[in-house]
Amino acid sequence: MKSVISLVRDSLKLFIIFTVCTMLFYFGLRAIHAEYENYHKYDPPEGRAVKVFEQQDQSWVDRLSLFFRLGE
Image (cartoon, rainbow, N blue to C red; front, side, top):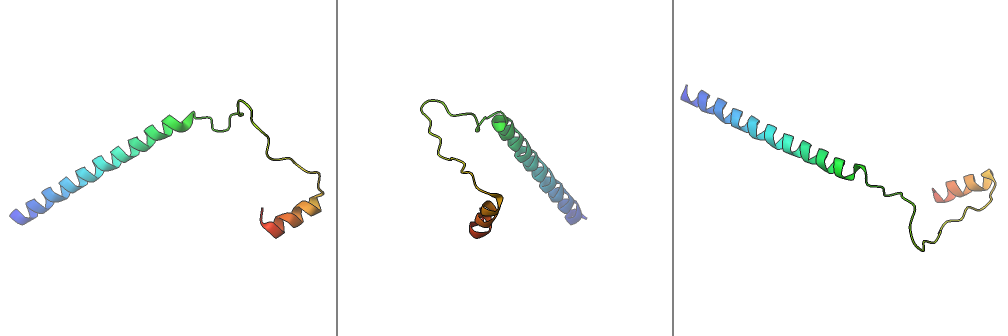
């Protein structure tokens, strides 16, 4: 009988520790998400920025051919 009570108590301790760690992990992820949610990484550049991509006028057949050849 003593063994069963010990087993139940140890199982309850493990469940409580697991639950607490899961909650800490969950709320930690929520805090990190809230921190970076308003971070604007696609703002237009400031200062002396240079445009590095220039669209060329190509027909859709040429673009499709390039897509299949290079996998772009």
